[in-house]
Amino acid sequence: MVNASISGETTEGGKTRIGATLENFEPDLVILELGGNDGLRGFPPQIMKDNLRIIIETSRASGASVVLLGIRIPTNYGTRYSAAFEGVYRELAVELGVPWIEFFMDGVALNEDLMQDDGIHPNADAQPLLLDNAWPIISEALATREPTREPAGH
Image (cartoon, rainbow, N blue to C red):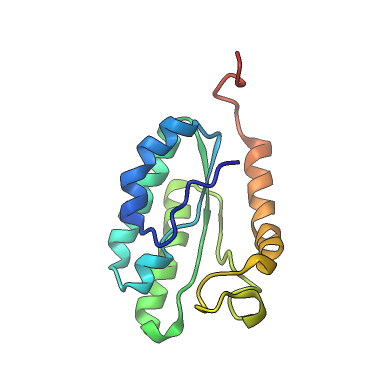
């Protein structure tokens, strides 16, 4: 497992880095949890969707499977924007046939004891719950994955 994330990253940054990241690490599975910073900056959901689509398609073209972890943004952005933002994950999952989780931070995001002081990022205590949220879809993707690469060292 390699965490190739960068704190504060947007989908634009992820799109820019995905090619080199795939080449450097040759993953079998890409766990894509990106977009929150786009939402917090009020970026247009369509741009976020286009960037995520490129990341997914580039990952698949490299031979990696992809799972998508959906997120939500605070409600102060308005219901119309929040709905469009959250819809990006569902729409891409359906359009591209990507396994996904609607809300990766379910049970964590509204619990102050599980969040850092910024109120946006989960703390260390939240990590087991986040794993519990994501593990079913990750383990299913790993179990159903068709091997496309030789094991390391061969």
